[in-house]
Length: 91
Image (cartoon, rainbow, N blue to C red; front, side, top):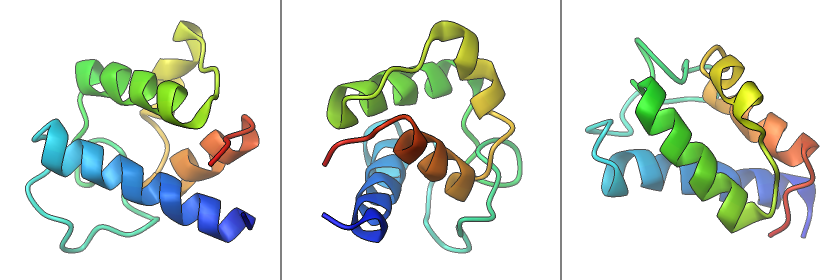
């Protein structure tokens, strides 16, 4: 699987988790890779970020230590996708 396809899969996983499963964000309208993970973007709070991190670890086989979760809140959607890929995500 190419990196861009893996990135697309991770992006879709994040959006589906946040919108459909965790009910954090109401709509994908206006959400881009430049959208912040928190206020003004995906609106993910700290507890939801922990849940999302656990889901990413389970689905893509990456390790994200507890100490690395808070800094993820400062990323954009694209930044989070890149970080999961950097940590060795597997399709």
